[in-house]
Image (cartoon, rainbow, N blue to C red; front, side, top):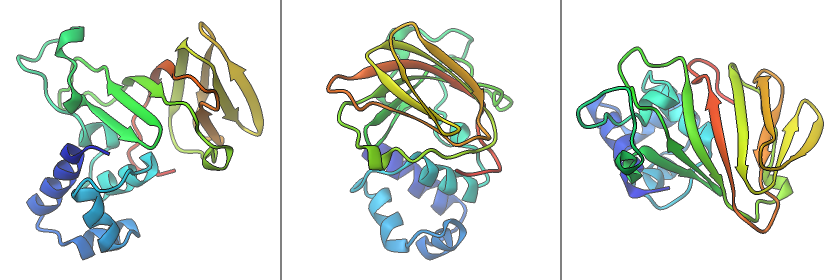
Amino acid sequence: MDDQYGEIIKTCRQMRGMTLKELGEKTALSAGYLSMIERGLTTVKISTLQKIAAAFGLGLSEFFAIPLQGGGNVLRSHDRCSARRYVAGKQVYFDLRAYLGKNSVALAPYLLLLLPGMQREDAVPRPHVGEEFGYVLEGMVTLFYDGEEYELYPDDCFHFPSDKPHRVTNFSSRPARLLYVGIPQRDTLD
């Protein structure tokens, strides 16, 4: 996880007048672990980030949404910056939303980079509220969905309701890239 996201978490917590202990009580995470996250000393699962965002009354996409200079509805490749990226283990999400207005919560499109070497024991499928679409741009990925396992290659895609256990992983020795679009989770955490 990048230091800048730890800073975002710390800023959100302090703006709400919350102590690490209070945030821990709301998220079922220890104050020590939260402190390590804020200082950028550990990587964090997406589900943990969702818990933290929910404790602040935010959806995950709102939590990491950083407004573009000048606004607008087009996102140029040279305008995507590291501030619109977050890392969770061997997964790197690049936020592709051009419009990040207050009511922009219907879709959350990402360029998802799956780094090689994920372990099978780390690929725990989980359900949550929402819907997901993915299109494999490069590499090979493994999709677990509702007890089934699928190997996907470039130009393969998936689309499903998220209420069944699912997970996208990369067990290969090369990076994989996907175009990923989901509906931001607000009330249910995986």
